[in-house]
Image 1: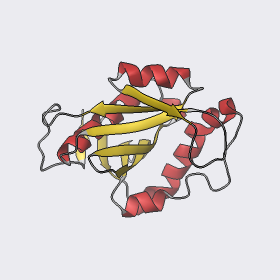
Image 2: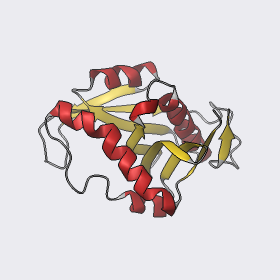
Image 3: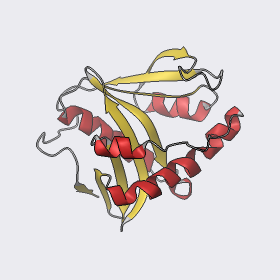
Image 4: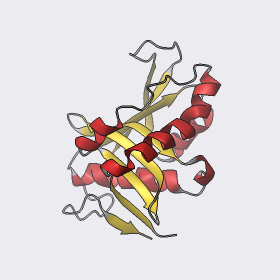
Amino acid sequence: MTLSFSLAKPSQLPHIRTLFIKSMAYIGDRMGIGQSADAFSNMSDFQKAGNLYVLEAEGEVLAAAALHEEKNGLYVDYLAVQREHQHEGLGKRMLTELEMLTESRELQYLRLHTPEAMDELVAYYNRRGFAETHRVLPSHGRDQLMRVHFRKEITLNDQGMDLEYEHDRQLS
């Protein structure tokens, strides 16, 4: 399967929102909080800011990430892979692309968080080289479930990135 990594297009927004809702439903279920009716309704804000990326194959969005830039790094607000394509290495590929994106923007780190209840995700991010920085309750106040925050230092040229091209690339 040939993948492409690119900035999301406005026409992809409904598909991306559906992807986030479906792929993250089990997290909300496990946490016992479900999802609000307006979950992931801010995707157009990320897209307009140039911070919504997709992995696609043959025009189908298989994974997506919404992020924002911090002082010296990128923060991954949302990252999801289609449920039927999980365990195919797409999450790993997306994280690699986000590391390269961090590098291309000459930033020093990539940060993200996951609910403490998601043991397999905590272990996954540890295996991918992310270091746990802290555990804290979410600032939104909608639940009382701890979040595990991670950070991965990015050294320029760790990924051998050509800094002129941060997205819109064909992948093998």
